[in-house]
Image (cartoon, rainbow, N blue to C red; front, side, top):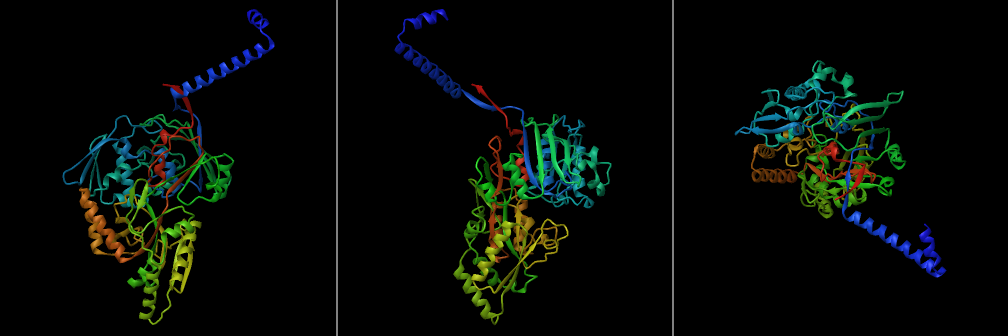
Length: 538
């Protein structure tokens, strides 16, 4: 210090100022260069830690993926129950394509430490097949024989080859036999384990909280140390529940939650909000208007159905009725390519529609064309229905009555009893190449999803052939034939596909799915999500 004072004593006041300025510049440059060097030779890496809150509108009912068809249960269950495909070491297929022998990994455990074996897999499948379980997965497992080979091996035998069966068993959520095995399947929904589940996924149940009126407000999950895969980075995963969208959005703006997902278009409150990451992920779904020719005899006329299809501009509907949130579709087969969806050629031709309507009225002595259009009580669907209504009236339809119903009300019979003339509804395609659930004649009655009550023997044959063909080129040829026949018969007006939209704060990293089959699939890689990171020098 004395030396520094002696040095400064020989400086003039001007030299002292320049020395201090030079020293400051030197140190700033040194710090800046060091910072740049660290940034150039280091990277951020995820580390374990932190918490994450995701919001839902609605309530969990039973966190049992085998018996519950509640979407919230299915989404939460994706964190708690591992798909069979992730529990396997592989499988073998017989030459005739009917027998599949699956081999489980060793040392699998449930979150409570009990062993997970082939007995759990067999129990799960037989529960699904039991009609008293009312499992939403039952149709996918009809006619499948299951046999125990060993503690780690299972044999599945089909009545006939089914090329998409691999998707069925790899996506199967497995439930614990030691928990549910002693409970009559009719009483599964009464079990406390539906709200306090034991699973095998990356997270395990910690606790839930509820109000005095029984409304569950939050679930808390923590890392499952017995998970067979890579352990999650996020230590505590919360699900927060709200009674309506307004409360959910308010929680996001107040930073009470970090994220939410939706299959519906976003409200302006969220889409215009700064500081959020909005990811739109293509999903294999389409919304269409299905014509019930049994309910309204007018719809049996091919030219009238063709006119109703030609009257609607799907591109304009997406832009004006959905605010640009959606992708126009023109047929039942969706092709995913480069992050987009294609489904055939546009069908809009208003002039053609007017000509067909005029010809229909002339042929039927100016009979009034009156149509009832049923639509679920969802704002974006009602907006789309209004657009279609106006489009039909513009080309000469005399009256279109909108009938709004609550699709989430179990007592509503609109869809179950096919109580509609035309129905605006959505189809989710588990496999875009398999049109069986929606267009095979065997699926016309509930719980099938052939909402147009469509029947065509050539289409049935093509669908069945495609399901059994292991050669991709032949299968594709059958799908092209199916699509061409269905489009020519005009059983439905195809409208749009909606992406799955995930809204989250920038703190979330590692979420990057290219496509989603169902919303629950977003959690397939949840063990790779992270909210904490550190810089590491390379």
